[in-house]
Image (cartoon, rainbow, N blue to C red; front, top):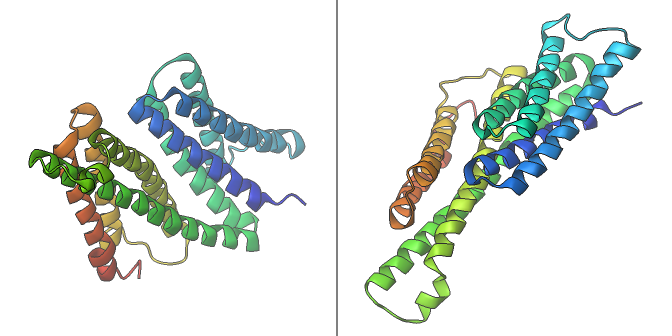
Length: 272
């Protein structure tokens, strides 16, 4: 018998990696990341199409008769449109956000189907979703921490250069341009991971038997952390902020992340 849980997890994994690739291309105009994301999304489309054809040809059922089947077909349409747009046009903004919406809808469909159709496997899938949510959130925090460290090294290096303190510390800290770039790259990797973690967390909150609160302090704090780092990227990419100014903003963003992790986490009954 086919292990549907494994296939569902593979679809979510490929979809999530594709979103990360499209996000990197959206921010950096990275064609290699775009190509990798395109082929990952193509694999998602292939798996979705296989299940769709199985429903139509084997079970003689067009999956649009129920709300949740309709969600699956809707996701397949979104993925199809994304692939076509990505190949024929250069509209990074549209492709990225279309795939974020598609990932969320696909996640809702798979978790609901898993609960109703896969019995014990469905329960395991929902529980594993929570584990992945926590793991991705912590991983994104790890990237944000690295970014903060690079920013602090940049500010220290900047201070030493301005005071003309030419010593061994100056050379061991690294080049200012590289420190600024590495800090930027770490944020680029952290933002999509946190976005996916939040999507998984919200979906889990709705499909799990526990009561989900939108106004929970940790939930709101996580959204605010994501918004703060998106503002960082806007300032960096759109406004052209670099160097000392953006490093100071990044340091402040990390302090807010710590407040969310420790203070908001301790105040959150839902997450506790």
